[in-house]
Amino acid sequence: MTPPRRQRRSPGPGRPAAPAPDDAPTPDGAPAKEGEVRNPERLFVIGGEGGGERADIDLVTLIVARADPPVSATPEQAALLRLCAAPLSVAELSAYLSLPFSVVTVLLTDLLAAELVQARAPIVRQKVADRNLLEAVMHGLQKL
Image (cartoon, rainbow, N blue to C red; front, side):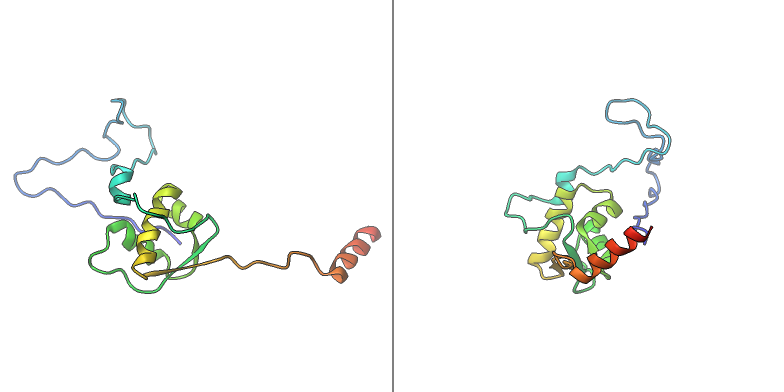
């Protein structure tokens, strides 16, 4: 599954065209390296205030969308909701959106409060393997 991409708007009449993302200098004034992807928005703008309490989410928590993105959703929240049509872990969401885990956690906390997504614990397998299975593996290894 590929992450959604936002389309850049073309400048209106009379406005100068913005430099292409690949030509834009880095914050320290040096030209960008080839293939380097930068996120022009500051993370606190994407995450909002984020001063409140965060949901108890870890990297392996599975997130599933309950509804389509509302009109009032930010582009990042809408992207999260579109990606979560099928269960995805928070680590996968963070990678697909190229956002740090902490920012994704803030976005998911807002979506959980609005009941637009559901967080589920990952499926846990048996903590202790079946004795018969272990014996079968041991006998198979002894025959080698």
